[in-house]
Each structure stands twice: as structure tokens, then as C-alpha cells.
Length: 155
Image (cartoon, rainbow, N blue to C red; front, side):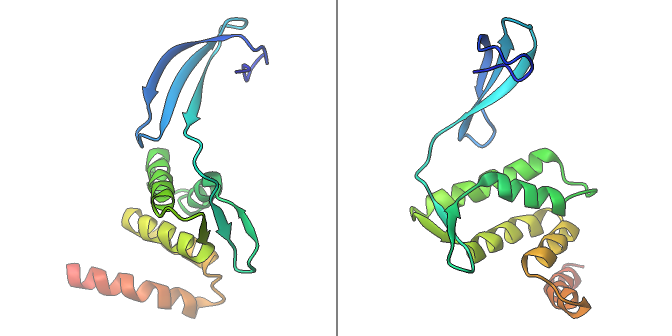
């Protein structure tokens, strides 16, 4: 493993532990050249799942794309990086648990929205507005109706 600071390929592992989601090993390393420390993650290489886009283009499943979309939706919201990582891990687990080699992007988006709705409603609406390509205020109102009804029943 090359040091991200000095680029020398000479380090030692200081600590290893299973990540919170249980699907990765977190390793703390120390560069033997510059003495700086850094973290790496070792993940199981899963079968190559393809995401089928609306135009039938297939691209590899990328958890970083999900994390990026969630981070944008949760910007300036009380949602921690750990919560975002947990959502990404849960979605990734759900995707691999299907046993399928392809997943429709629509289904993937719905999975993200379902998880996000349980964490932060404003972030959910932000994500939905981009994912569902809202055109006007009516689209926002239509999306908010189920949330408002749910909250009215819970009050």
C-alpha cells in the first residue's frame, strides 16, 4: 500500500478491525518512511452487479455514487457521515442480497429514498426532487402529501 502523503510503498498495520457494517476491514497503517498514519478499508470483492439505467445502458454498481447523492441531499442537515455510511451499507447489502447480477436504477433510487425518508424528511425531499426530476411546485406538493398525512396521523 502506497502512503498517500509521501507515496512510498513501505508501511505497517497498527490496528485492524471489522467495520460497523461487517462487510469491510478497517486498517490503521503507519508509513515507515514519513511516519504519518492513514486508514484503509479492505472489502470483499462481490460479484459484479450492473445498474440498468433508464436508457438501458448498464454500468457497474458504485456505492460512491450513492454516497455522493446522499451527501448532497443531506448537506446542512443534521445527518452525520456515519448515518450516510450506514444507509449506503444497508443499500449495498440489500442489492447483493437479491442475488441478481443486474438492478434497475429505478429500484435502486426507491431503495435510497426509503432509507433516507426514515432519517431526514428534508433530505428525502431534496433527493426525490433530483431523482424524480421535479418540474414545478406541484411535484413537490405531490411528494409531500404522503409525509404530511403520515405526520398528521402520528400527532
